[in-house]
Image 1 (tube, rainbow, N blue to C red):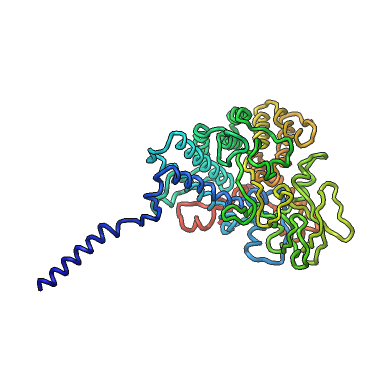
Image 2: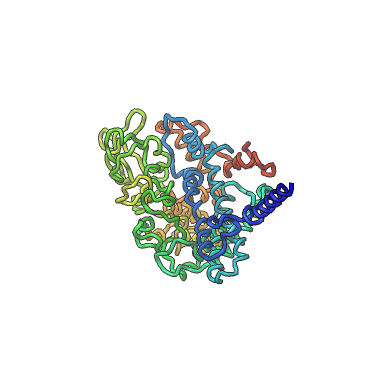
Length: 520
């Protein structure tokens, strides 16, 4: 019996030892939220991770912010699977709360916000960091939080406002904040980022957010909020930071000249299939018309690679309306749009044969030509999966046109910044006079300068012209036999279409979230 008691005592001691010394100790070779933020190297990794969701955001943002405008049109396909129909619905303004592509924009913005919140909160306990490192990390985090909330509030209206790391299920279920509250947080974050970040130390830049990035973001927010005088002050600080226009418009999209003086915040890419760097947005096949090129052995003239583009192409074809909007002599037309010509099948699949300029294009006998987005496809790229062309979220040309808008809305002359952009494009000074005419001229200039850079829908929202422009665009499209596949209610919008529906995935699990009017 004594032996039994001794064995039990030993087992109890062993169990106690296991409980105290083994079961409560995290593996020493694994990182957890409790042990990760322990040095500068780990904070750098966490800061880099905040940028990663922007790649996924961009893959959907061209649908919600560019295809959702009069700049592009899609080619129809006999495949009526969900992946096709939901992308077409965004273009057609027939959005539903179950649309996976609009929901992905929401999701990726919040992923970046979540990571920024964690960095900001964990900085409070990082006494080992230098002041310079702390300011850089906090400035970048607040810039990205402001950037993503600015995207969300313009697409969805008031949204749940998370400003701290979520540590429990209860903290995950917030109600929507009012738009004014979201904008107040965006302004506060962007202002803090401006104060903490440094101007570019050199060109080309590293790709990290800078004081210039935060400045142009805050100015964009102020123009949206009609706080024009504040935007003007901010935008006038940019030349002293070293920003300027490239001499050649196309250089802004040349991977050999990336991150130069015109770049204010670019998403960084390298060519090829390197994990985590190949863009889903700047994939060549998405910007080419649908084809069966590989089936007949022909190669894509843009890349020299044979490729069957039936499934992936045709979702962002430049609209004729956009092409016609360029002024005669505008160099940006040829830099932004090209024509790929070939022979079309009865199913409208194109056998790619040659690339031609868009200006004054007339198809050769027996051939058809489709426009394609050219500005992100650098000559010599041979990888259909992606190129090394960066995507510009903000360029100095954008800042100049925001300055022109801010000046004009205050009754001041916008001629200097507006004409700087026009001169670079090979155009003469604007002939528009009067505030209303200049407002129209600036909006048109932004369309030509920033085509396919995901600005057009937000410009139409901000200018109050979205309903008129989109309805007129739809009427024009539906009158043409080539677009007979469009439904009668495609591109027919009213005020409720100015916002996307809140994704049903969030409405369904969070009773505190109220859906936008006009959706269910």
